[in-house]
Image 1: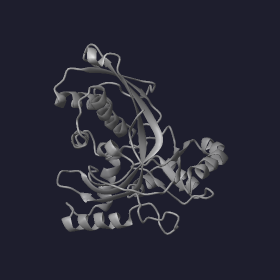
Image 2: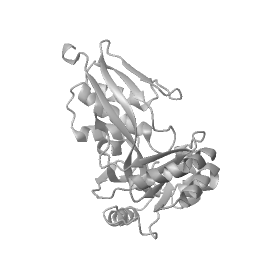
Image 3: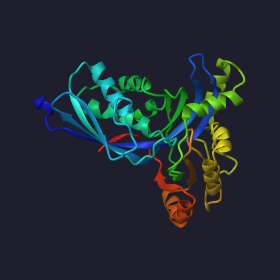
Image 4: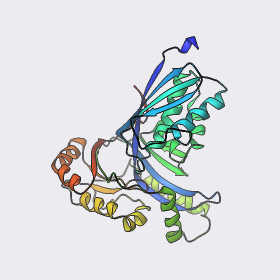
Amino acid sequence: MSLFSNRKINIKSPAKINLHLEVIGKRKDGFHELAMIMQNIDLADYLEFEINQDGSINLKSDCNHLSLTSDNLIVKSAYLIREISNIDLGANIFLKKNIPIGAGLAGGSSNAAATLIGLNKLWNLNLDNNTLLKLSASLGSDVPFFINGGSQLCFGRGEILEKLNYKYEYGVLLLKNPNVSISTAETYKSYSHQFVKEDYIRTDLVDKIRNNLRKKSLNDFNIEDNSNKIKNDLQLIVEKENDSVKQALYLLSNLRDCLTFSMSGSGPTCFALFKDFQTAKKVLEDNYKLFKNKGYDSWACKLLDKGIKII
């Protein structure tokens, strides 16, 4: 243990938005087959990892609404990476929470991936990227994206990843009612019931939709062309059933200089894109009181070309 004494690792763990979310159909394993573009933004949580002397995994946070026990993805990730590495080292983990909970921004998934990356470094495990990706896939459908982050095509349950390289510098404005959260599982269940007509998806349909998204992806995707709207199939369900989401989308649609707008993930967070961060920031400043009066927290963010970062 002396080699690790007083070691600390600090990690920036960013949120994501969906620039495309298409539910292709139901798979034989019970999950949904998805075609997505996921994008990191610079709204982020921060985690500190420190070696402890008793071999335990201890999680603390400044967020009072978060479970800190074995059902937390940070704790699950820590035990998983320790188990497969066959070591008995411990860690004290502190989470500074900025990403709202249950918001469609995948803060928990980001934290899970950050824990794998942080403890791999803290404990000198030297696990390679592919190993971290395999571990992350067992923790949740969104977790693998965060291992490399940035902007990626995500297929399958979200674990089949293809990196996108682009030069765009759009600014993002987020709206989220702090009193509203939405069950991802229930949203997918409702979507399936209303819109998925076949028991299982056809392979040819999966291949066709994947190839279409590759062609349309951000390398060629001109959001400033108003004919291009962000697709989020789950919005068909949530916007109809949730007044907070419906109102957020209406507010965003009427903002000056808004290029396009959508819901992220299964909601309830909604976002608008602007030509750059300064424009998004100015629009937020001009409308902050309006958003607050309507019951929304709001943020202006940049797009990130990379994800989780050791700082």
